[in-house]
Amino acid sequence: MMLLAVAVVIALLQALTVGAFLWQRRCRRIADEEAALRRNELARAGRFALAGELSASIAHEVGQPLGAILSNADAAGMMLEDEWQIGELHSILADIRRDALRANQVVQGLRALLQKHTPVLGEIDLNETLGEALTLIRLESRRRRISIESNLMAGNAEVRGDAVQLQQVLLNLAINAMDAMENTADLDRVMTVTTRTAGQGYEFTVEDRGHGIPPEAKQRLFDSLYTTKPHGMGLGLSIVHTIVVAHGGIVYAMPREGGGSVFTVWLPRAAPCVEAEIDNRVARASFVSHAATQGGRP
Ligand code: ADP
Image 1 (cartoon, protein in one colour):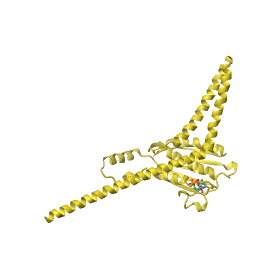
Image 2 (cartoon, helix red, strand yellow):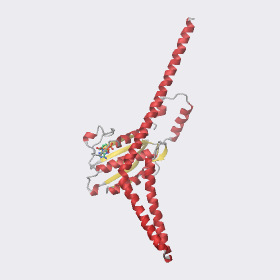
Image 3 (cartoon, protein in one colour):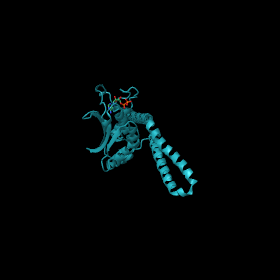
Image 4 (cartoon, protein in one colour):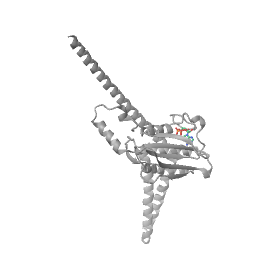
C-alpha cells in the first residue's frame, strides 16, 4: 500500500515536472514570437521614417523622367503629322522607354522598402544587397551635394539574412552620415561605403567626414529615442542594432582619422552545411535546447 502511494506521488511529481517544462517552453515560444513581431513592426516603422527622409529626392527623381516622357510624347505627336521624320520618332520612343524605366525603378525600390515584410532568411550576397540600397541613397546624396565612394569588394560575400532589413541598416547609417556632414565644406562632403572580408564573415563600413560623434552620445548611441538632432526620432541606430544582432552580427562606431565617424557592421559568413545540419537535427528532435534555436542565429 505504502509502495503504491509512493509510486503515485512520484508519477504525479513527474507529470507536474513535465507539465511545468512544457508550459515554460510554450511561454518562451510565445514570448519569442512576440519579440520577433515587435522587432518587425519597429523595423517597418523605421522604413516609413526613411521613406519620409528620402521623399524629396525621390519626388525629384521620378518627376524628372516623367516630365521628359511628357515632352517627348508631345514632340512625337507633332512629328506624326510629318511622315518624313520617322528616324527621329524612333529615337524619341527610345528616350521615352529609358525615362519610363528609370521612373519605374525608383518606384519599385520604394515599394520594396515599404511593403509589409516578413523577414526571409536566406543566403544573400552582401555586395549585391548593399548595391541596390546605394541606388536610393545616391538620389538623396545628389540632393545634398554629397558624393559617394563605394568600394564593394569583388566576388561573392554570402551572408545568411534578409535583404530588405540589411538594406535598411545601410540606409539608416547613410542618412546619419549625410546628416553629420550638413555643415562640412564642399570638398569634404564625401561618404564612403566599403565591404571587405573580416574573420569568419564580412564587414561593411560607412564613413563620413562630418562633425563626429559627440562625447556625451557614446554611452547611449544605440539606445532607442536617443537623439541630438532637433527633429530626430532617435530610432535609426536602435533599429540598426536590433537588425544586426538578429543576424548574429555586431555594429559599432569609431571616430574617423581626419574627422568624422566610421560605423562598422560585421556579419557572419553563411555556412550552408552547418545551418542545414542544425535545421535537420532540430526538425527530428522532440526537445531542443534554447541555443540550438536561438544561439546567434537570426
Ligand atoms: P536620429 O538620427 O533620429 O537622431 P539615430 O538613432 O539614428 O537617431 O542617431 C542617434 C544619434 O547618434 C544622433 O542624433 C547623433 O547624435 C548620433 N549619430 C548617429 N550617426 C552619427 C554620425 N554618422 N556622426 C555623428 N553622430 C552620429
